[in-house]
Structure formats: structure tokens, C-alpha cells
Amino acid sequence: KKVGEKYKYVYCTTSASARYTSPLQGIAKINVETGELVGKWLPEPHQFTTEVAFCPKETSCCSREDDGYLITYLLDGKSKSNQLIVFDAANPGKGPIASAPLKEWSVNHSLHGVFIPGFTPKFTKEIQDTF
Image (tube, rainbow, N blue to C red):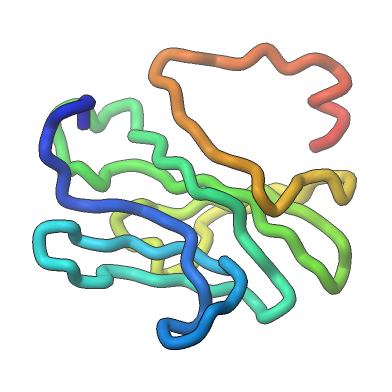
């Protein structure tokens, strides 16, 4: 959707508990029209996600609002490893549909996500070497 347009879904990081304060670990999809929790995914207790970014499918210009992907990093405190994980935005509760490990323990838990239509970053050798 474009800025100022109504939307139906919001995607966010979520904790394991709805009652108690706990770390942000997984992702949730919420229908903002009804308040319904449409989908929720939680990793293992020693794993945590960063802020999730929505990326529309290239062919989704005129289709469903949730026709895209959710992308976030997964930090594993036990193995001290990171990976990039991808979800189907239509059904994130099913878990990741793809993942790619990162070579180093390098992603901060507070990293913010953003999607900029039409922007393609230039990956230097240094950045490529982290994948």
C-alpha cells in the first residue's frame, strides 16, 4: 500500500507471552480491521528475530495486500550464529520458507528493517563475504 492508504495487515516482532514481559522472539501478522491475530511464529527459546520487513512480490501490483515476503534476521544465542529468514506474508505462522546462514555473529538484535521500492543496494566484496 501507499502512504495514506488504508491497509488490512500489520507485521511485527512478538514475544512468546501475551501476559508477561518477555524478549521479542518471533513474528506476528495482525488484521488491523478486526484485531485478529492471523498468524504467529516463534523460534526456539534461545532464538530471537529482528524487526520484520515486508517485500511485495514483483508481480503483486494489483493482487492481495499480503502477496509478498517477510524478511528478518534470526539470532541464535546458543550457537552464536545468525541467519536471514524469509516467510510467505500470506501465512507467516507456517514458519520460514527460506533461510541463509551468515558467516559471523554480526547482526544486532535491535537492527531495524526497511523496504524501499526500486532500491537495489550495491554489495561490496566485504558485504558479500558475510554471507
